[in-house]
Length: 439
Image 1 (cartoon, helix red, strand yellow):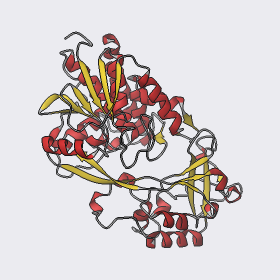
Image 2 (cartoon, one colour; image 1 turned 60 degrees about the vertical axis):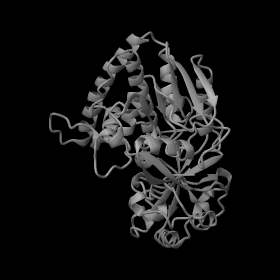
Image 3 (tube, one colour; image 1 turned 60 degrees about the horizontal axis):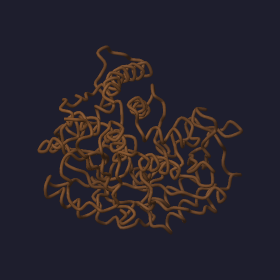
Image 4 (tube, helix red, strand yellow; image 1 turned 30 degrees about the horizontal axis):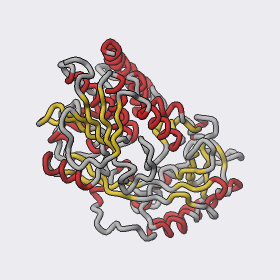
């Protein structure tokens, strides 16, 4: 068929939806992007902008050859990702991580989408699955009417619970009780570290375990996604769990060269440095309890909370029973799903699935076979994860464990990761070359 002869509908202007819409538009297709905001917001969204980051402002590691999420970012960069372009343009200091000013990031993506002539933005709530060709990228907080229609037409859904960390004002942090350093000296001192001695740590953990939680009586522990486990749930596993998790002191030393007993890290929330995110402190405590318990950390004794942590229920497709490895419905090959609703977990993973879905929808509309994503790339391994039948489906982040093993056995972990990255990027180079030829 002639390129651009058919309009594609994309539902949802989050990370995956914007990624998909922008790619298709740049390929010459007309795109109708349907977004419910500002007419209606989900429980977690507050901004009218597109690609709103509702949890952390970090897109995790930027290490291409030592971290699977860093490798995933590079795969997407080489395929022309809008989300990674926006993140690179709006980054804030975060050591080896790619963290962004979330308002600037959203504004960047929104401007690109609204400025693209092939995209028509429709501000309306989608209450039914769109007719194909289409990509549904409404996220794990899909509004009720559409969620019900998806369940009716695609079968039952799975539920997991997700949590977000609090944000405090910079001026309320007691910097006399902090030190600035990045773990193992990687970075330029981008993290503010809030140390605790043993007595302070143990009192904090005890208060955390016994603090009152918000509306958790209906939550089945099996529905808590491990990657976003609330800090109080982690603390309940054992006295030292947090010291081996988000409060680990390894690789951090204060001005005297001493390693603290435990450390909470704060990361800049915006370029101006007026707000800080409590790294890894996703929580479901009641708001007064968050103020009481987190203020027990010496540097936060007078903390002003600009945003308290929250928990919400996320909805996922039973993707292994419904989706092909290109993110299309097996029952309707021109109707795609993308983003966290498919079972990929994380900002970058969500955007990556939108890019994969758009690439293959474009190919199908041209009468070409979809790219056979395989487990040699992180993009492909995630696509296979959500489309491979299993009895215990769980949302999945980027990690080396889902990649196809190397043909040769390599004991050196750093060398092994480098070899995996080199193989992945060689494959992505082949895909990128094919895409350029089609533009």
